[in-house]
Length: 273
Image (cartoon, rainbow, N blue to C red; front, top):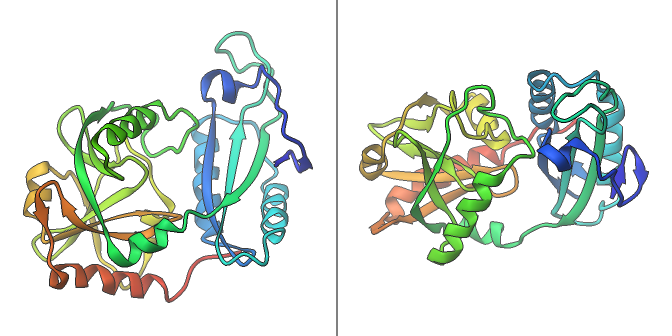
């Protein structure tokens, strides 16, 4: 583990990331030492730092630390790098006064090989009863405060399910526990708007920026999901994962073929340094 560029596994107990979840993180795929979609991860981190009123960050230094860490697993076809930025220590109570040194924490872990299986075979998902609270100030951010996801993961465990769709308090479909969602409805790819809650995922951004893929952002209801001819989940590690069954609804291979075509398009290139 690297903390501020140095090998270390200890952090100040007064760190605001620990005390309040006052920070950001990004989970990044490493392929043979290459940092996949780094520009998109960096862009999201920079936007998040502005929204959280973080002090200035040396982004060039951070990038160098990320790439140095990635080079240590050069021989691994797939690996995972987790990058956390916390506001650091200081201030009194909730006040951030005196917090001038953002803490940079980088860790490496093995890649979940099951994601490769999911990409090829698809997964079954459920509808979660857990809901996401709407908060426009936090919408889209991948902050360290993930208690809602902890609740959702616990619900999935009780249902013996690997993933599930989650709605906001008004019944709008927002995302899955650890992924964004896309549905194909009325000859159009649609992904939920994240104006009030949800995480703006890096793979979601990459899909939406791709010139060969046309995606519309809009509110999605459970009825829309039920009427969709197919749907998939996405995040930076799993890529595009087809949903072969949602609740009791199963999708045919012909329907899933549309998702396979998207996987091929996305494999044509990824954003690195």
